[in-house]
Image 1 (tube, rainbow, N blue to C red):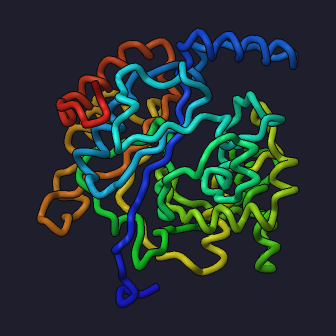
Image 2 (cartoon, rainbow, N blue to C red):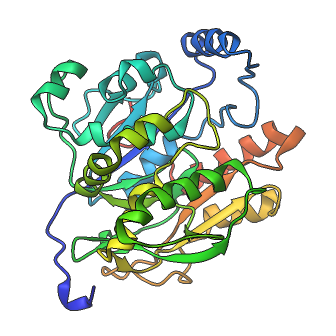
Image 3 (cartoon, rainbow, N blue to C red):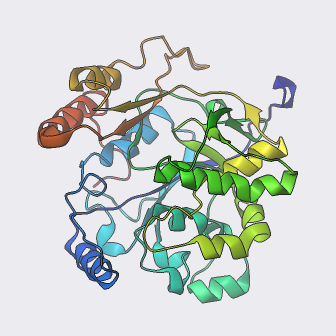
Length: 339
């Protein structure tokens, strides 16, 4: 797409799933289901432990991206809704698993299953709405899909994510083989499922997008599911497995169709394994320092920061406290969704 195609008169919503591993209601279900399938469950494991910083996602959206119309928070059940949230806030919409994940696929502890069921969030089909016992969800065609470890650290614009109505995506080829990690297997499955629609052959590599927030179109999400419903339903499991597909199936389709804008928005991926706590705190507090360019109003841009907690080890509590302190310095004020 070219700059001449730009038309930015449309709403953008923000969507992300969240798990509160400290919730006793959720823990009881998790323990029961894990035990049923001979698995162990530890709420303090790296995958589930709670960093208590989700509030800064909401504050960052309101302060740095006021153009986002609505925030859709995906949670398993009412006890998972953070206590600081005003659920009646007009900018907030809570989506429970029962609202879009078929009964036979619940409960799930698998983000891939949640992402594979996303088309049901957009459905207007009367029969499906009866099955989920709800009305249509007020969600925009243009969404930014995110996770609970991704944060805005400074001002960003709609055109960082969408241009001319198309998602801003940028892919590069990376080598793939069967010895790689679970996530890479899921990305490979997702890519190959839609590649055949375009007669693209992906042996030995995957198209890798930036690990960050992902702009998507609801119509593409529904289209992919309509084409590959049986395969996607068969891939869904309660726990993460190598044969799952993940959210990148929608971006892969968008990319292979050519209906995207080739652009990399400002983003940064960090882990405690590769970065020291001082460096990460510096990134949080001083990202909007001119290095990422300027917004149309002249303000210095920040970026989307992904904080992966691998490598935090025994210093988890210390790092958790320091991260909260740094976010509190750039986002001290409550947002409209908070009590």
